Length: 236
Image (cartoon, rainbow, N blue to C red; front, side):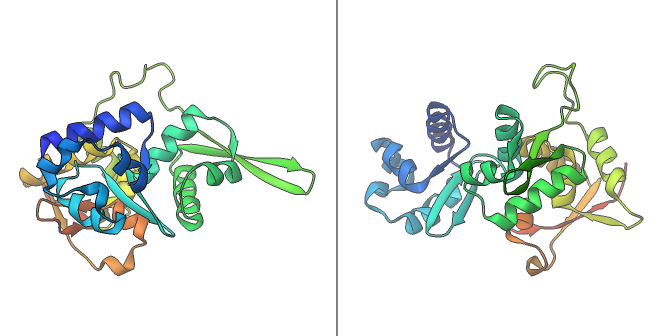
């Protein structure tokens, strides 16, 4: 990953104050200097070709997402985007969330259900003229702690999460732990890589066809771009 490209992307997202952009919007905002990084005039490149060009340069945690004919670049996991959006816009209906975020219906339902199942969100049934609807809000598990302060993304907390969802098996699925902890992607990936490098855990590949596209995105791509799906705890 080229650090200058990372800085360019971060600057674009900060200026737009968004966690995702369409490729069309991204191309219009990339500076001319980007040609020195990717060696091509991206503004004359199709969105599909641009996807393949920038993939090797994307910072950790960035995701390419396709819905219909539109390509998006997310700077967070899909779950993190939804959490951030709902914190900024509490008590929206599910239909409003669907209308305002570019998620596929099935993936949005899966993420919302997971947030509720793991105690990170709660839903409310509301009466409407034509029946019933559902509102959703994020549960603040640390109401007395200021945002981003005193939150420990440590191996100990990582192990506690592993123990909480492990059901007597020698392994867990990485996407399940990622969603349970709900850490920023960079913090989760860094902690997991440190534990793997130290031999404390082992990450294994498996059949990706057994996972949905969203579950694959919430698994882990190692340094060789191999999709790691299973996490085994080997030591202390």
